[in-house]
Every structure is written in C-alpha cells, then in structure tokens.
Image (cartoon, rainbow, N blue to C red; front, side, top):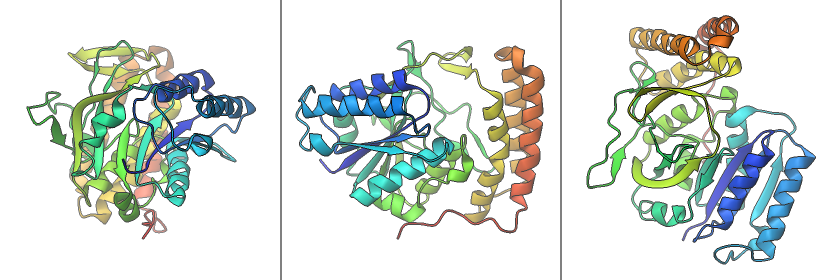
Length: 325
C-alpha cells in the first residue's frame, strides 16, 4: 500500500486521544505514519503520545508496523490555531516526510479495524475518499455530502442511501475521516488556517473537487466517540449542540467561503446572501431547540460573525492559500 499518513488534531482531550490511538493499534493494516498535532502543547498530551509510541515499539498491535520506531510524529503547536490550523500544520509535516495520502481526523472518533482495507479499494480511482461513519450510539451518522455553491450551504435533503456502486460523487469533504491524495494537496494547497474552525473542511473539499474525482463511500470506517446533545430532525438527521465560539465562526467564515467561490467563478451574490440568511436561521433554530441556555450570548455571536463576514468579502488584501507545486 502507498504511504498513508494519519493526521490527528487534538486540543485538551487526552482521554479521547488515547481511545483513538488505541483504535489504531487494532487496525489490521498499519498506516505509514501518524502525525499528532497538539494545539494545546501540553505535557499531558505529549505523555499520551509517548506511551503509545512505546506500545508500537513493543509490538502491541494487531498487525506488524514496519517502521514502528518512527511511526508516530508529535507536533506541538506554539498556539491554538483551531482545527484548520492544526490540519494545515499536520499535513505540511506529512507532506515534507513524503506521504502519498493524508487521512485526516479529529480526536473524538475511533477507527474501525479494517478501515484501511475498505478505503484501499477506492484509492486507485479517486483523489478524495470520504468514508461513512457511525454515531456515538452505534447508529448511522448522516453527513451532508453535497455543497450547493450557489447558496454556500450543504444540501440538507441529499439522499443518505447508496446504490449498488457503494459510492456517490461529492463536492465537499469532512476532516473527520477525509482521505486526500498527494497530487490533490499539491494542487489546492494546505487547508486555510484562517478559518480556525468550521467551513474549513467544506471549502477544502470544494477546492479538491475542482481538480479530482471525489467520492463518499458506503464503507464504514470510523465511529464517533464523544456524545453530543442533539435534536433528531428526521430519521438519521439531527441537530447537534454547539458553542458560542462555533456560532461566531459559522457566520464569519462565510466571508472566506465567498472569496474562494469568487476565485472559481461560483459566487452568486443573491444566492449567497440567501444562503447566509438560511445559515443564520439554522443556528437560531439550534439555539431555540438544543442550546436554550445560551440563547442571548449565542444570538450576539451570530450577529458579530455575520458582520465580520461582510468585512472579509470586501477585504482588498485577501489572498487564497498558495498551492504546493
């Protein structure tokens, strides 16, 4: 198998990270490298990574790891740059080391043992592969795999079903399990760390879909390991709890999204404005149904983020992330 580097971004969640690392040990096909980006830069996280490295060196794995002494790379960061900054740093390190594929994931998932075998059958023909996931309770997790560029939102009614082919085209991605080929990363560059959190993976997947064939597949490769308060909307669809910080970035980062849409000729001012209203309405409903205790502060953060997005859309100094070629 080609060199698959798993890039994990973690921040103040050592117990979740331990569970994820343990799941790597149970994999029936070993990755080439594991890059752990520590946005907290804490001794506790360093200790977790060190213990795991020793387990690999002692052969406490379900299969043989050919380079166990060098398999784990710990990347502490000077400051917390969020998920987008963490994946930027982790992918850069993996790229410098010579990775052929970049498998991205947050620290609040676990990998199923045969995940790499499942992904490997799709890798020869697709530059981006997004596997399916299980929710915390073991049920299916629905991911909105179609990005409506005219509105700048996910398609909320895209079918969750797969046909006999076992895959569907997607024009976005999720950093919770997205797999990216090296030449794709070279062409679109590293994730834009200015996003901090939210919409970063959506836009990165959108950019990747411009240069390669991207698919979401029915093969289940991950399970979420953190329970999140939610409101079930219909069937497998649900509205999860959020935070005031996330609410701000949901609205603010639409400014960065708009700039990338403009860059590729997909920006529709009227449609995007409608999408912004719909995004605000969705978050307002989330406040009413899931996060009532944060209604006042949450509404203020949504408005503040919206104002910032307008500044970004009209910022004359904005430049896209450079490619790596």
